[in-house]
Length: 251
Image (tube, rainbow, N blue to C red):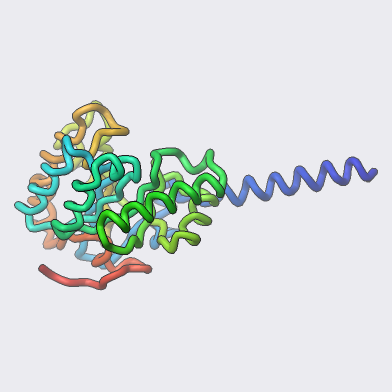
């Protein structure tokens, strides 16, 4: 091989390795594979416990209604907040923590990490982490990338920020315009596994307008199902996943 060809081959190999390092974590986007092969990233925790999580807030048009509903149900949850939403509504971000819920990092901007390099992703995650720590007065433990698009840059940013990547097991697909309270419950329950981490949204900032109302209406319906099954509901910090922060406790 001539020198120019050798250099070209070396560059191609380096690029291929770089692409593989960036993209291989995206295999976690397949729910079944994630639960089986990456249970810690999927949020598989203690059987009999459901970790309830909400993405994309805080949103003054919807999050307060969720806080009141959770109070009525006696539930605490984990709110994966966007830095840009928290910066726009700092008092509400702080209120979520004051109401007894766990706050976690969803990035600053809602941008797909698969198309972002390590430098951009690292800055984005650190900015969100630092802001949320200041607003809530609490340490941050969890990182959920937007769209659940886990990448090499996500893992790098998580390590630098001292955060644990956390996706989900079932979701309600509640961001869709066609979603209803009943469809949300159906989607959650048909994919529920022991020790599930459930993904819902307390804001429609990246979802169909008004979709949060269906999610809110689904909560008491989920409560009926989970109570009938003897399931306890709480935040990720009490879920028993690897990297848990507080252990199990009861209110």
